[in-house]
Every structure is written in structure tokens, then in C-alpha cells.
Image (tube, rainbow, N blue to C red; front, side):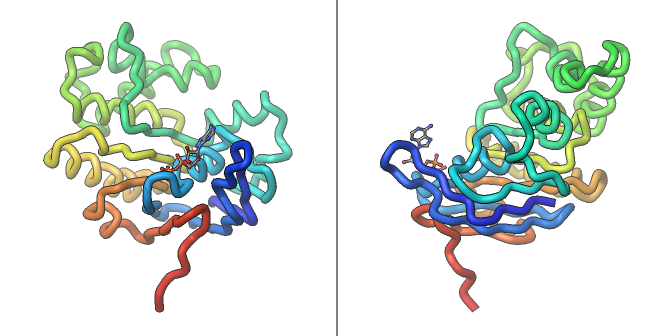
Length: 220
Ligand code: ADP
């Protein structure tokens, strides 16, 4: 599903990624851990086509994304990849339902279809009775689950999450982690999660350790 080959990336004179090779299978839940500044977010951004590597190949679901122009890339990203960030980044003036519908509207769905799909996702998250609430009227855990619904509304093949539970308390954290595994089991999505949460990392199918821009070799 996700193939990275020889990825390097520098910002000015700072080389952040120093040759990353990584293959992630469909339906796998992978955590990415490592010290702050190691390059985890940069790697996730490149995986998600939000940034381009200086060298190396990124192949997502069989498409070599480096070859796409900006317009094709942005359509590809909207269809194939869902993003969840540490802070929910919901639009405050829109309801939960409207926020979830946005990626479907961008994709070109009619307003009716986008609303229907958004409602389906909210139901899957157990949030159907929050559909008409604005973000300020939702708890932290609910906001983050609405953000997950928004990431999934176009049924992307992969969900990339950067510290998704970083701003949540223990109970909401565990609920969100359970949700990821439940969604993978029901929808078959691939999840890549950058996290400092050791409890979450230990539960994922595989943990990738990034240290100083490289993947630390698995100890045998
Ligand atoms: P991590 O997620 O592991 O904490 P990051 O990938 O966010 O690490 O950052 C790795 C390094 O790259 C850091 O030193 C950070 O300051 C630097 N960096 C990240 N993004 C940029 C950018 N857009 N411009 C300049 N430096 C950046």
C-alpha cells in the first residue's frame, strides 16, 4: 500500500531524512516513534504527499506520486489519504456534519451525497446525535472523533495521524485508539500513526523507530 524507497529530505543545510526505505501493507497499523526532531512528522508529510522528498520514490496504492503534477496530486491526496492531526483543526463556524462533509464536497460529490456520507461516518463513530453541534459545543474526545470521521469520509486507503491523541486525557486517548483498530477491522484501512504514546505503539502491528533521520534496525 505504501512504499518508500531511498527518501531523503533537507531543510537548508539540515538533512532531516537520510535514506528511508519502508513498505507498509494494506490494513496494517504502524506506529512511528522516536525522539523529538528525529524527522517523524517530515516523513509522514512526505508519505501523505503534503511535501516532496529531495530524492527517492513514494508509491501509494500503486501510483508513483512524484510523477503527478500539483493538480493531480491534490485530487489523489483528497481521495486516497485521510489526515488526523494533534489538534482537530475543525472549522469553528461549521457543524460536525458540515466539517465531515468538506472532503467529499472537494472531491465533487453533490451536497446531498456529501451530507449522507458524512452522516454515515458520524454514525460509525457513535456521534450521530452530535451532527448539528459546532466544535465549541463538543468535548475534546468528540472533536477528535469528528476529525477522524472527516479523514475517513472519502474512504481513503490510508489514514496518516500525527500525535492524534496528544491533546486528549487517558480515557479519550484509549477510546480513540480503540476506534483506529475498530475502523481497520471494519473498513480495512491502513493506519500510520506518529506517537509518543508507548501504550499505543505497543498495540500496533509494527513500530518503526526513527532516530536522526534513519530507521533504527530491528533488534533480533
Ligand atoms: P519530529 O516529528 O520527529 O519531531 P520533524 O520531522 O518535525 O521531527 O522535524 C525534524 C527537523 O526538521 C527538526 O529539526 C525541525 O526543526 C526541522 N524542520 C521540520 N520542518 C521544517 C521546515 N518546514 N523548515 C525548516 N526546518 C524544518
